Amino acid sequence: ITRQRQVGELVVGLPVNTAGADSSKTVQVREFIKALKMRTTIPVKPWDERFTTCEAGEELKKLGLNSRTSKKFIDMMAATLILRSYLESL
Image (cartoon, rainbow, N blue to C red; front, side, top):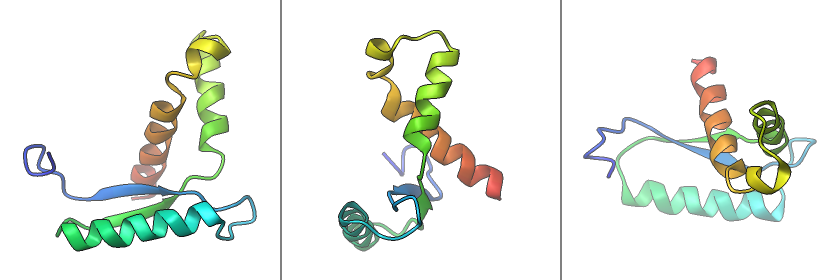
């Protein structure tokens, strides 16, 4: 897929806690990133994903989706916000 889509970089959300410290989930994601780097030559960029789920819920609410419907889309919206944050940092 990365070759087909000509992906130049992979951005992976890093679930640090609100203080910015690692949690048990952060350790798991860091292991995933390590494994991913071993399987590809594409640069992998970990990116702080603090508060993105909350922000995603707010964005979906603005779009008029109720909480039941928005649950289906929350992860996609959070991923969009992570990528947007990364791109804006460039």
